[in-house]
Each structure stands twice: as C-alpha cells, then as structure tokens.
Length: 226
Image 1 (cartoon, rainbow, N blue to C red):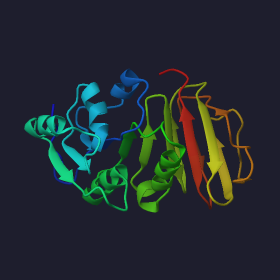
Image 2: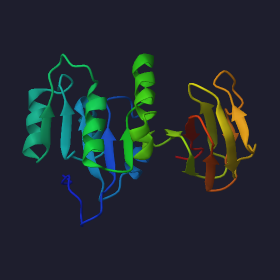
Image 3: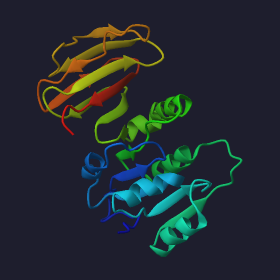
C-alpha cells in the first residue's frame, strides 16, 4: 500500500516511519510498530525493509546507489515519490530522509532499520538523534526489540516489567536525573559520561519516566518480549 504524505485533517500531523538501510533482524516485531495512518519514508535501500513488511513507502530519499533501476521503477509505479540526491554529498541518505521528515513537521518520527553494520554509521545515527530538533520532534530508532532516543528534559518509556533500560550521559554529566518505575531508582542524581552507573536498569511497570535538570541522556530500552 501507499500512504500519501499529507495530514488527515487540519492541524493534525501524522507520525512518520523512516526506513533506514541497516539491519532489521526481527521483521514481525518491527511490523507491529507500524500503524495504518503512519507516513512511510525510506532512505535509499531502506525501501527494501518496507517491502519485506508488505509496505510501500510514500517517499524515497537518497542517491539510490543501493537500489536497482528496476526496483526504483517498481516503487515509482506503485505511487512513491522519488527524491534523488547526487552521490557526492555531505549527508548520508538517512540524514537527508530525516531532514525531509523534520522540515514537513512530522512528529513523532520512528526510524526502523537503523542498527547494525558499521560502528561509524551507528554512531553517526546516534549523533543525528542527539540534535535538539530531533529531540523536540521525538525521533526514536527502533527495530522491534531495542529503541534508542535522547532525553533533554523528560520522557516516558512504554514497555513491560522486566524490560531493560539504560541511561547514558551524552557528552557531559547529566544532572538532576530522576526516574520512576525503575528497579534502581535515581532521585535528583548525576550520571557521568565516563561511568556506567545508568546501564541495565529494569522496568517495574508498563510505563517508566525519566527527567533531568541539565545535560543529555541517551536512553536505550530493550524489550524482554518482542
């Protein structure tokens, strides 16, 4: 199916699903994350992940070096809009696709297939997610088992008791960190980027919350059932 990239009603902006060209080891859990009214965007070869889930993106963005002409023609004939960029560019295909979604104003934005492959690319993706505009738009990376996102003020985590939650200070100390519904609570405390204290906490309810007064936290939520 093709989902047109436009709001359903005035003042309403639907969520965007962005398919990256990384690994998607558990297709069925990832498929369950997609809602019927989501806007589907693919970064180059990420379109194959959408196709494997029985979906056709509304928009493809990139230099298309990971897709054949036949595949591009198939997506185009299915109604997808192709946004081609030159191979010699400063941004990755994922960054271009993410910028596209942010400029339109989609929020939240869920990136599927962002993990795996090269370490430098994985770190680059986390760097993208740490941008203030991405935090404000609630951009999260997910593969059905593990979601990752940044917290600058407050955020909620939805899952199940027993899920693992790691909170990692990013770049500088995160101060005034307070948590709810985690097994090892934090109460107005400081997490250092050079220590591992925030790693491997455990959810005790279906929803946990995290807040901080200053700094930036990378939250990694690993579902125990997926």
